Length: 151
Image (cartoon, rainbow, N blue to C red; front, side):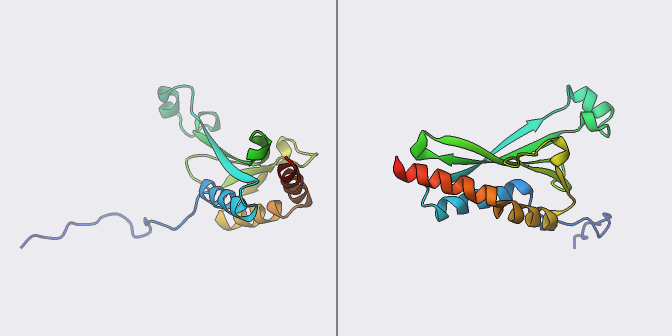
């Protein structure tokens, strides 16, 4: 009879059901298209910023300038207006999805200090819900819908 493999890993290493920001943004992008009958769609553009070199990253991966950073941007797209694109918000994080930093772009006072630091999925979802409900967001979407219907 074969012996069971010895599992020496600590019990708190487990697959957790954390949903990364990019997945949540893609869900919302899809729902926007449903709501607007695809007159305005959401698209998520993702970028990855790597360290200057693998050697540099491996030498001191803990230095902030050497970490891999991911950026996900939610863009409103209007196909009827020659695929006009409007950047709504961006989210950045390192190899771990949380904490993340998020910026709402239509805010006229936006600058780098306007980033929100969000420690976990729950805080990110709350922030995103608030930003999607802001008057600026509604105003932009209504204007895009109006223009799309007129064309």
